[in-house]
Amino acid sequence: MPHTPRHSVVVPVCNEAEVLEAFHTRCSSAMQALGDDYELLYVDDGSLDGSWEILVGLAQADSRVRLLRLSRNFGHQVAISAGIESARGDTVTTLDADLQDPPEVISDLVAAWRAGADVVCAVRQERQGEPWFKRVSASAFYRVVNLFSDIPLPAQAGDFRLLSRRAVEALLAMPEQHRYVRGMVAWIGHETATVGYSREPRAAGRTKYPLSRMLGLASDGILAFSTLPLRAATWIGLGVTGSALAVGLRVLWDHLVDHRALAWDASSLAGLILLLAGAQFLTLGILGQYLGRIYSEVRRRPLYLVCDRRGFEDPT
Image (cartoon, rainbow, N blue to C red; front, side, top):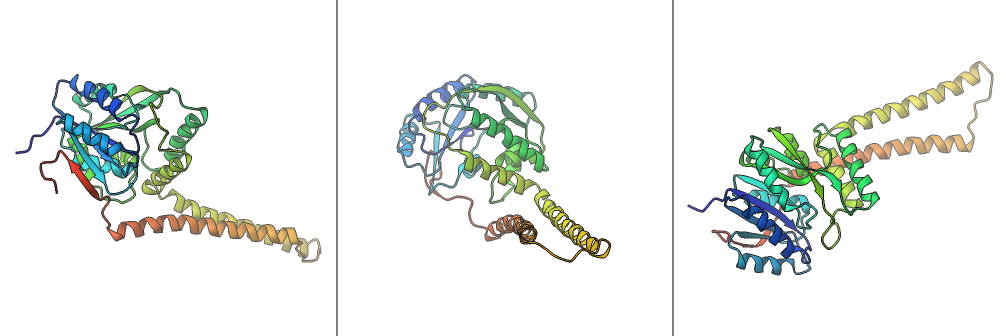
């Protein structure tokens, strides 16, 4: 029988060579302080800076380290999903390797789990060292997602969280291709607790979530858990149709009552055409987003591919 650790820590890694050794030292110390058996599962998501070689060295020096190397960069959310799928612990904690999320907070997450919570989210109360634009855009991200999504998310709760084994099994039963793990965990509905913490400045490197990726993540959160954009397209169509009808009635009124000639100047025609065209393209764009997701799901491609693994009893 393979040994089953009490706790698993899943760490997605993408070009974090500068900080990996420091992270491993702090995370190992935090886990040892719990007094329970644990494993550290690093998922290399297509790193190109030597991160894998550093991880191999950590695995050779520490038998509690297990490694997955994805065949290419599949994205942060997929890397987290790959790690959760391979984790063996009664609890599975996910956090990034950049040390913005302090590993020492894991003890507070475990305490909340022991108190009965199946999902424990680490909520950022302070964001040290982040520029104002990052703070404002992050706050706007949660507001927009919660405005459109049918599943509310705890504000300022990222991917630093603990899942019980029951919550992990529920999450693994969700096979969708477009992974928005925060929303998927919220959808589970098991008892949830939150733990506040102060987010530290990035230890090295640069963020893997610039504005473009934040917008993509927000899109995943909205489209995966809400049909509101489809309903909005309907209301836009009704609004444009109503506006066009009102303009037509006004022109007809001027002609029949005020005896004005039926005439449209170039600017009025151009405005009306642009209004109608814009509404059509917006509606088509919304439909295309949902259609593209349906296409991704029906292809049934693997969520990720592993090209190397270390620390597994079965190397295949």
